[in-house]
Length: 201
Image (cartoon, rainbow, N blue to C red; front, side, top):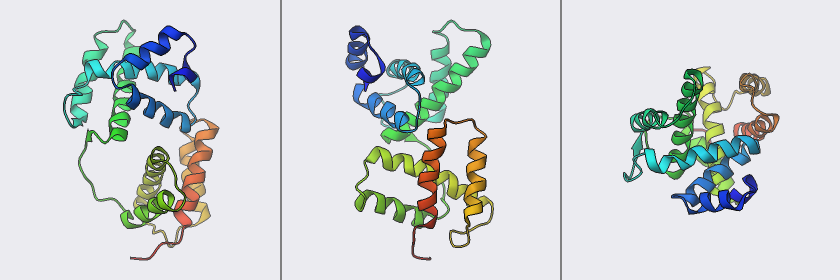
């Protein structure tokens, strides 16, 4: 992964030799699947390097409050304008949260999820029948979660949802100014996830 992002041998070796190299590459590969540009991935790769120093990685689980405290400590080590610093701390929290969640080390409250049985049935099908990789399954999980939560808030069930509902949700996602590849991937996940035949409960 590092060889795909950097050209200088010294930089590549530095990323390989720093702590959590395997875990960092796993997350970067996840972001690449989402359609992130090489430039943004290089920036995130540098940010990930700071996590070993600032996050309490000695703990089995890390909470969001720990991440926010670590972001403040990290910010004191950088020289940026006030606006850049705010954005930097936001990016620190965002990617630390997503990275730790991907590793199964994020401590977050358990909430009852709408359509949990149907979601698990779909993901099980993708894993067992289609043989998708764990990192792909994780991305499917995040994409589906957002859709199902939105459907629940709209008072809809999986058995009366229509293509127009999916189109409306995709329009909401498109307003975030994501890359076309990211939006296309969201469509590819949500359409089969919504209309796959599942047992009614």
